[in-house]
Image 1 (cartoon, one colour):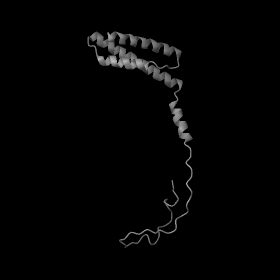
Image 2 (cartoon, rainbow, N blue to C red):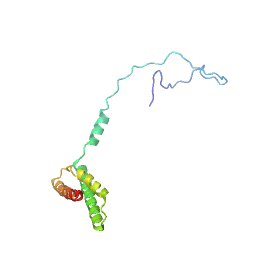
Image 3 (cartoon, one colour):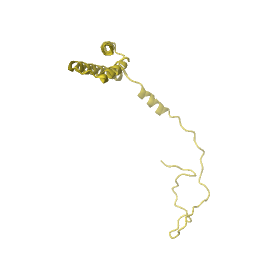
Image 4 (tube, helix red, strand yellow):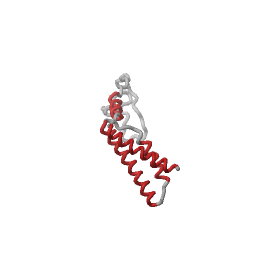
Length: 134
């Protein structure tokens, strides 16, 4: 990118007075300024805005994939709770993970079948949370 203007780079050779081989002093040639151009108005960043907006929109497959991942996470936490109860070591961090999993299961995926399965997982998580609260 080249910048032309009063402070921009010039492709001309330096002035004769500005460079001297044996001189120890520094001097600047303050001759007539080069061609000045008025500042142009900034362009709208609609291309960037459109890209950012498109990144924020989830398609149905992405939403479904995230919902499946949340369901698997909740089932994993339920398994950890079951193993802990069978081993006789009740862990309060597992209950905290169950609360987090229950909160994440509230969102819908857009797929009625998957939403039904996720609501059943959420019900089981809520039952285990109620049991742990006693």
